[in-house]
Amino acid sequence: MRRAIELAAQHRTHPNPRVGAVVVAASGEVVGEGAHHGVGQSHAEVLALEQAGDLARGSTLYVTLEPCNHLGRTPPCAPAIVEAGVARVVVGVIDPDPGVSGSGVSRLRDAGVEVEVDVLGDEAEAVDPAYFRHRRTGLPFVTLKMAMTLDGSVAASDLSSKWITSEPARSDAHVLRSASDALVVGAGTVRSDDPLLTVRLEAVEEQPVPVIVAGRQSLPLESRIWERSPIVISTRPLGVPSGEVVVVPGDEERPDPNGTARALAERGLLDVLLEGGPNLAGSWWRAGLVGRGVLYVAALVGGGRGLAPLEGDFATMAESQPVNIDDVRMVGPDMRIEFHVPHNGVSRESRFLHSDGEERRILRPDEPPSPTSHRSGGRRQAGRGA
Image (cartoon, rainbow, N blue to C red; front, side):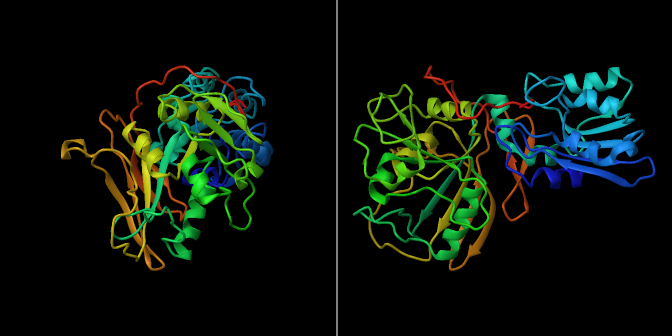
């Protein structure tokens, strides 16, 4: 199962889940391996069985996620497992997708296949916390990224912020970006920084989708971001040079955070990196959407009043939110702090694999309050059978 988990972690597959599979012959020899690569491509189980060939008969199949039993863009896996003559299937975790959950296991057992479930379940779920978060709540998994001076400012009072952190810290942040489906910033960040919101690393096959959350002020139409056809979230229709405008209810300041997050998830963007600025970060934090945070604290002191990382009123200590610090390390001269937000009512602990391959412990967030209705649509359709 650990090998299947390693295989699953190698690919970005959203909106489909990351899945790995290993076929072990009756002799104990590994005769087939597979991992799902993305929408419309063969599932991990099918690839592993194809590699095993006739040796799959009488074998044990280890798979990180429950095999599907419905027809999507690819054939269902459970019947293929039965047809291959597999004697035993070991499942890491049951698929929380209502269209799958339990049906794959039932199909296998009805056909006489021995099935064992919840084997290294936490580790199997840790491969893809965003998929499980989405299937249970309809929301994406949100990571908040912040870079600040040692005395807590993300920018100077003139809004300048280049560069607070060192080159090693900025390179590490691009690794963080590379694991994300979408990068979310506010319109203020677009105006002040003119970002491209790209991953500037070698061998990046797919760039995350840039997302702008628009407020009352107009968007700069000459910004470089329009080269990337971003998604623009707004409370009203807008004319933009490129991309898609998604209208979400909100107040006079900005779109509702929950409605925005749900709109992104509906477009298959399940792993979201929130990069600010302070107004947007503060509103998403107070909405309870942030599940994880990565802070880069520079070896730099501003020495005065700059911009706080989270805008909004911190009226009393009773409003503070405890977090669990998972990792603290030096990145060049700067410090990198990673934390997760524990939520009440979590029934099961899960873990996730950091970009350096180390395992971190994280608690699955509860579902925030449901957003109001908004315009639907989509770039990518989610589904295990896709």
